[in-house]
Length: 82
Image (cartoon, rainbow, N blue to C red):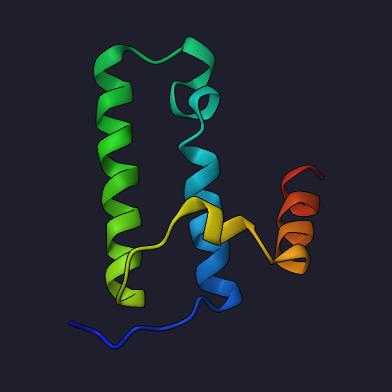
């Protein structure tokens, strides 16, 4: 098992991106995806999350990704809304 790491800015940004993709409106593309496509996309995103957790060496919650990171969050939000 890899040594436990804290989240650096790059890792945190990857988790933030996955978290946003897992939101209901993004997951099902505002209702445009079929049930099968949503299930397939959900499985892919969960797998990507698990791979990142293995790299970090521990479980990572969505709360951890967004809490206590004002600089990273502001950078992410400003980039995604420009």
